[in-house]
Amino acid sequence: MRKLLFGVLLPALFLASAPAAAVDCIDVELDAAPIPGDPFNYLQITWSVLNCGDATGRADFTLTLQRGFDYLASMSFRAYLPAGDPVGGRIKLPVVCCIPAGMYTLCVKAELGTASDMACATIVVDEANNITAFTNLPEPIAVEPASWGSIKSLFR
Image (cartoon, rainbow, N blue to C red; front, side):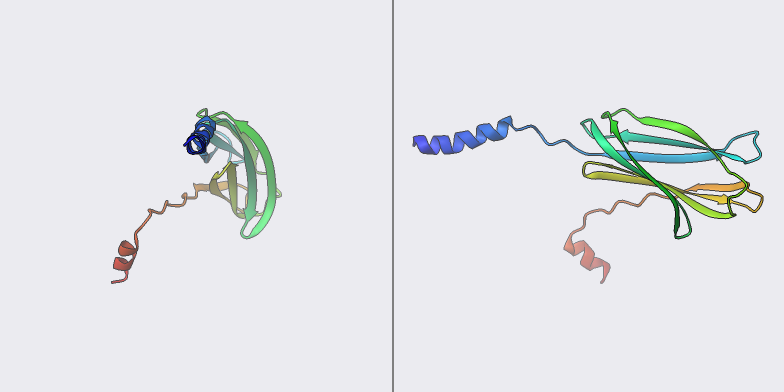
């Protein structure tokens, strides 16, 4: 009986003393607009990141700029994010005369533990190096869990 008691009590005490697993969550936002009063030579990019989890953690960020399928630039860095406190800023991005006209895609990807989020936008530059459009790309739509019965009913 004593062995059975220790066999049940000891694992129960061990599990009770183990720390609870942290919930990982991260949210990235990206927006931009031409600076008013400037002839579209500067684009003000506004970004924000929120650690929506319950513990401070180290996030890995990757910024990419591409034109079509060609990657023009990529940058990676890490930062510690406190839980629940949004972090953000503004960047004034010049559009210099040597940039070819076309559509560019700017993406920010963040990973925190098992969670990840990405925000992307397209920037259209005309022949005179004016920014003619900035569009946020829609975020992926979450998929609802489905049962086999509901999936079968789609094909009937």
